[in-house]
Image (cartoon, rainbow, N blue to C red; front, side, top):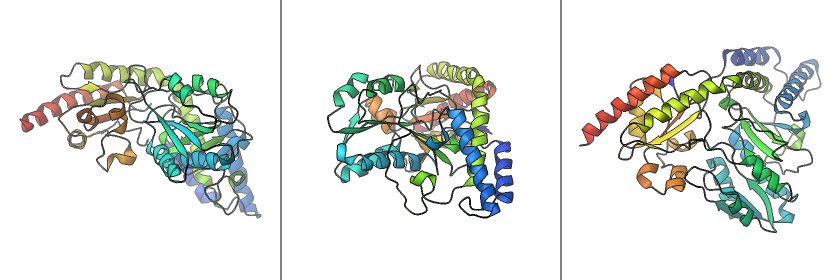
Amino acid sequence: MIYFDNSATTKPYPEVIESFAKVAGEYFGNPSSLHGLGASAERLLQKARKQIADLLHTTPSEIVFTSGGTEGNNLAIKGAVHAAAKNGNHIITTEMEHASVLETCRSLEQEGFEVTYLPVTKDGSIVLSDLIHAIREDTILVSIMHVNNEIGSIQPIEEIGRYLADFPKIMFHVDHVQGIGKVPLDFNKCHIDLCTMSGHKFHGLKGTGILYVRSHVKLSPLFTGGNQESKFRSGTENVAGIVAMAKALRMTLNKQNQASDVAEIRDYLMSELKKIEGVKINSPESGAPHIVNFSIPGIKSEVFIHALEESGIFASTTSACSSKNKAISETVLAMFHDLSRAESVIRISTSYENNLEEAKAVIQAVIEKMAKLQKVMR
């Protein structure tokens, strides 16, 4: 089996699973309970919070635990604009955000908020001047992802943050789900107020996530109840999952010195795919080291994905959140305005666990499957 769908989810490290099992079995108390079992769980929870804060170069009080990227994006965006509604009702984002950002913004439009969706260039990036011109007196939030989940384009987060630093009323949210552990991001240097991460994207467990909330940033909670997580996120904390996530983050960040190996795989895939007639590369040359997105116009994405699976190769089409709906890639459509290209997208996404030999096998399979499918379609 060759698993090249790491942007959808990663395989948990064995050590992460072991950590989860130990904590779940031995430290199962509710961290809000007053007895000894609860106190033990609370100590583990706070230790994990500090470990994560140290790894991200933040403070423990700025770390809020969530169930993952979708909840984190919803809490950041809805929580920020509802808390700041008295200052304005205008939001700025891009046309190629993750569905958990786009759909959240669309739901806020139903509440009366106004949203500007910035266009992107053919390399999947916004133009900073477009953002500058979009800012209004009533703008209260800018939400822009760091690394695009479909094509791997990297937005100029530092430049955006530096510019927005002159607008204290505007909060800056970054979806860092695809970048964490792959493309470094300095929250302070980039003047980020809110940043979303998801544990299962860096070899942690599903159902775990992190929302960085800069000190003094106000959020209206999505859930009310027990006032956990500094009242931002009520509900009994998933201590075992959080401890396991802290271990996964540490292990993944330690592996970042292997980034050149991941980039080598990407460079090989890009180079070889360009040689194949009928293939169009969608990922920019300057994109993230772990994502390669291409199209084979004339062959539907789902057909080609299943053809690869017959050879034991697992890749994907669009974002995993929308691929089952057989939707076209809105990201690729926004970039190239080409429907046939947008409905024939294949995404390959690697991790530090993959190697160049696997990439060579994938290229050979792409060539063979294309020839077979094109022959059938004639």
